[in-house]
Each structure stands twice: as C-alpha cells, then as structure tokens.
Image (cartoon, rainbow, N blue to C red; front, side):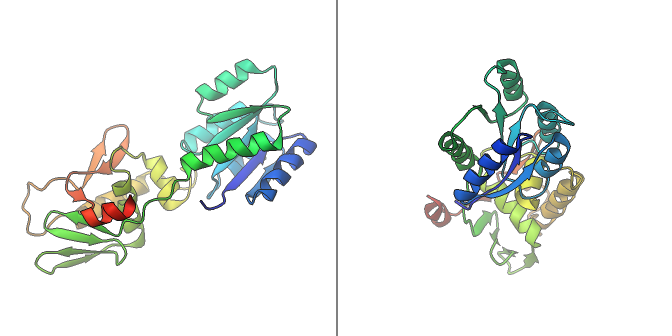
Length: 246
C-alpha cells in the first residue's frame, strides 16, 4: 500500500510535533496546521488521505471543521484527537462522520495502529482491470478505446477510462459524485463543481452506445437517484480478468 498524505490539525505544539514526527518516521507525508482555519484549508486540499483533527482548536473548533469537511469531502477519513473528559464531543464527532477517535494522552504506537487500520480500509487499490465486455463490443482500458464487432473504434480520454474503470471495479454499489471527484479526479468538491462528473458521464454514455445496437440497449452506466452512478448491466469483466483480480 502506498504511503499516505496525512494532515495533523492540533494547536498544542508539543503534541503536534510528536504526532507529526511519529507519522514521518513511519513513512507518511505530513502537513501540520495549528488552528481550525488553516486546518480546514489543508484538510480539503487535493491528495489528502487522512486527517487527524483535534476537537479543541482556536479560530474554528474541530467539530466545525469536521462538518465543513464532510460537506465538501464526504469520504475523506478523519480521526479525532480528543481530551479524556469530552465524551459528548466524541459522540457528536462520530455521528457527524468521523471514522475513529484517540483519547489524549495516547501513545505513538496506538495512534499509528489506528491510522494504519483506517488507511487499510480506505486506500484499497483499484484492481488492474484492463478489459471490459459490453454487448457487441470490448473496452480496452489500457489502450483507452472501444472496439465493436464490426471493427468500429471509439477513443476514450484518460479521465473517461479512469471513470469507467472505477465504476466497473465498484460495480456492486452506487458511487457518489463526491467520491468520483476524490478518487478519479483527486480533488474535493471545493475544487470542482460536481456537474463536471455529470458531463463526463453523459459523454461516456454516448460513446458506450453500440452504433448498431438499436434503441433498447441495456444501460452501461446507471443513475441511482440521490446516490450517484454505478456500472450497469451492459458492462461485464471477462472471466480471465476476474481471475487476475482474485
């Protein structure tokens, strides 16, 4: 698993330095923030894999930061750093979408173990699917092209291929626009309107229509109301590709 980029948002210098040093010694890339305003800016920036967030912060408290982060980056993992007596805040934080919490004082060993546990769950690599079957055609994701049975070809952009691959590899569930922005584009919704996802999906759907398949073709990409998109019944991973994934 590649090492992650972690944001440490903590106003106490000694704790912030100790946490950051422990993470760096474990091979992680670390960015520090000492208040809620800077912390929110860093936590919502592109390429962040995990946020360690103190609840008691100057300028904006940690729960405010968490609330805003969940609005713009709903899938970004957050571990709260809390005082021993702040049970109500911990409960509120978990209900607001925090993934875990660590109670001060904590050991570096405990913190690293919790960080690794969260990242194992959230940084699973997308399987290296290369081919996708589609009715009378085949999608070659490496070459970024669609090949129809009559030798007709259609090219895919790099983003279209990455988007299609992500949907196919997560075909058992609906994927939100925010997750697609984070995992395909590598940014949060603060950096790009989710309408960009819709436009890419529309273009991709047009390319995935069999030019000789008529009007009643099964959907390649299905819209799931209030949830996002998922790979439709028209798409399938060939058996030899499935064997490579397992």
